[in-house]
Image (cartoon, one colour):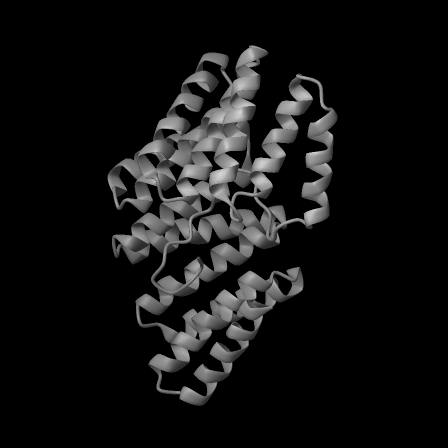
Length: 273
């Protein structure tokens, strides 16, 4: 959740700003009914589990295990590693951190044996996120820096930007605001170079929260409004609601209750929609 005082980690697994229509999930279910026991079925199981991850993570875990078993039956090592990573993500969503690390680590081991640098970077970054969620910041930084080094070797700017953001957020949680801004601003610059609006919105929001925590309210609000503008352009209602909540919280702290209420009421309306 992007909000003042909360960690907003840059997840490295495939993500979407909103759930796809139910018709697309129905389409995947139809495909699975006629699929042969091959890699296509594994991929469709991946996709279905990922679509359901926030609606029903328990169902996603079941689907993930199905994809894992089929990938193992086919001896498709890259597919096994991906299935393990997805299952790890579902346990992370459930806040079951021991299982999340277990599955991520198993996937990492396979990717290392395959020399799959992209998979290694994703697994390392994901493990770092789990440690950060548990406030084990030294370990989180260890995994983030390893992941960033791997993505630098690959020239994966999106991955690098994500790791920079996550590193910045760890420093923010440790109240090392100069270092937090150093890494978050580097991540924002890369996101701008990539013209990746969602990544920019995340970076802007988190930079705003650091300035706000340093009592630099004008700069904090400037970044929050920049984030809001991007999320409105993207049609990202979840992001807009979060941005309005942040802005409302600043107004509340300034005892500007009419403006705070206006933001909170708009946030509530979007949440109800």
